[in-house]
Image (cartoon, rainbow, N blue to C red; front, side):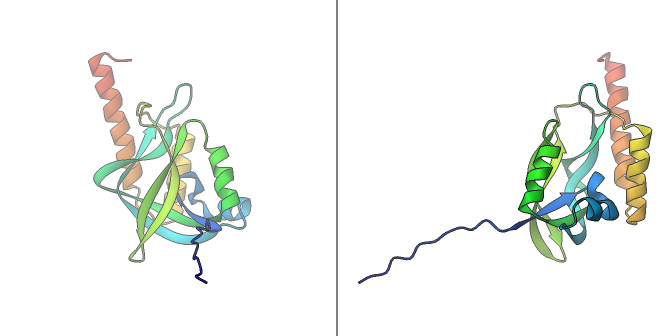
Length: 166
């Protein structure tokens, strides 16, 4: 009697979440999501930080593909239940993206949420910007990606103003 071998794919119980803004505050994440495991900091290559402004809102931090640029981020291992919760929290102006990031010379598959590039570049509210700068500073990350994102937004706003677009 011959035996039949059946392959079954079992969804792993955890996923890797990449945070580049709000969820980079390790203390707050550990408080809100006690089962989240900090993997560590990483650099996301060929992406830039940007500020996109959905209608009726202040500009929100997001990431966008940009050859030659990079941004610091934090990697978290999270249970699938947190993954579903993040999907609910970020529904609306954000969409999920799958990424690969190098961590300790290994390629790590992860996901995050980004604001649609269909929204115009804008300048973040001062309090939001100060909070982001505090997080980068606490993690000893370079402020260059934040400064460049502000400059990119300022240039886009100036261009739009000079072209007569409102």
